[in-house]
Image 1: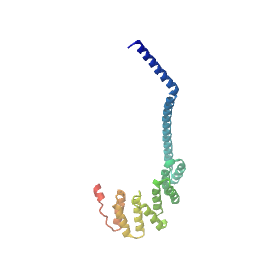
Image 2: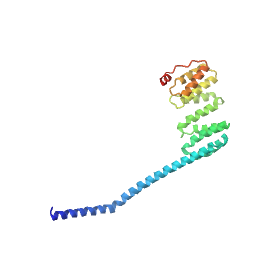
Image 3: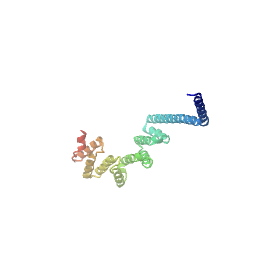
Image 4: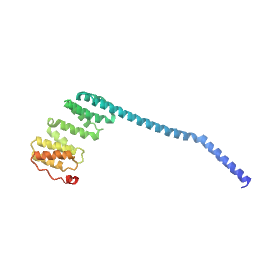
Length: 224
């Protein structure tokens, strides 16, 4: 390689370095901002995560403290105080509150809590559960036509609490003295693939108590 070529390469390399340093001086702040932003975002996410964990632990401690009160009435009162600050867990606290109110003999208070959950459109996955609990709790105290209509709506195919609602319709038939209808409903329930083992057991016991015959269930045979 000639001295001229070597000189040209050195000059070219120097030009490249000058350009690189120039770019770094002009645009280097962008890289710094990106790095700082990434670190800051990670730190913020970790902070938020830690805050959520701390909040959940604090809520859990409050629920445990409320559950440790000596009487159902005191437990219900303590749980009610937690509801406004419980966020997404408020509905779980409310169900527990309703149970404690019922344990304290305050049926009206328990129903008020359950009706509130059932009427809350933002609690879609819990509304049917609350409505069914309220219907069971009211029982024969409510208008029987309204009770039947509400239970039939919950007993529609595909509804999550359909088997339990069907059981309550059978209970209504027993209360009305219609054994044939009760046995028919209970037999359907016994054959229902959505029904739990405990529910099937109750259905078979009631069918026998009513003088009916428990139908053969192929699903039970497959499970054995």
